[in-house]
Length: 404
Image (cartoon, rainbow, N blue to C red):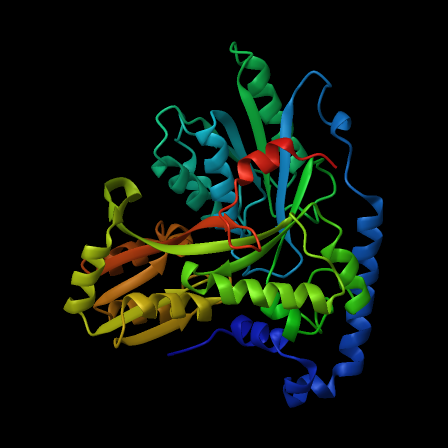
């Protein structure tokens, strides 16, 4: 590994058990615990207020199913591909789908983009642009979807309801997906899905920042409540080959927290998908044969990441490119390009980026020029859902029929 960003080093410290944290962290432990406790109290106060009721935003006549997908962990649980897969499930069943997200970054504009009118897609943040492009690739001829980018998701919901009112076909069904909305209390929802990492639950300190890597919770008892507080527990993520072992880890985690396994426990199985860049920054999927040819053509592979969990990403890549020399530069979660990164790219022969990172950087002229003559591929994650008995889950039916 060539270099880690400061945020990546900090993230590793947050994930470590208390006894394994570095000297400076231990030195400041009393102060950090105090800060963590105050953050916990504020998070608890907000959760007690609960979410707005649906009728406070929508008329009773407007039937839109609202599903929230979020997490307690700070980044890196593989939430984006889960949002995309749920969107595809509803598209397959002829729903009009909206994904609502605030967007990430200091200059994010509120913008609404749909599958028919795409002229504002360049204003989407990296994760929202990835949502858009992945859904455009989805093989459903009559798909109709919206990517709604606004810090106030209740405003996005109002916009989506207005589109429904304009529709002449009263038989169309609508679903509104809240991306990362568990802590967004101003927007109502019918279903809450919380994404968990069982390995981190078993090893990391069960505290909010800056002691542990969480947004809520203070101690094991509080996490027991959080684990039962939402409608579905998504355990993310593993490969199909490791499904059995991962299920054992989840069951062990549930047992340690004195909880019971139930039908709301869903395992997220992942698959890495590779793409080439087509004209207009659109995507073309690469098959396994093309990946094998690439693997035989290059010995050195350069990877630049701006994601929360690059270690897992690199492990995934090494399965496709065994016995290759990987050079990696981490810019931290949602990291921007630096001069060092551009120099690294210019001195590389074969480059791999995540889809999310590419769409964050592709409008940077120096980046576009640097990769123009390089062999460049992009990758993303597709997921599928299994229950704890290792059976493929019909999650669409579960969502449609779910009642509290």
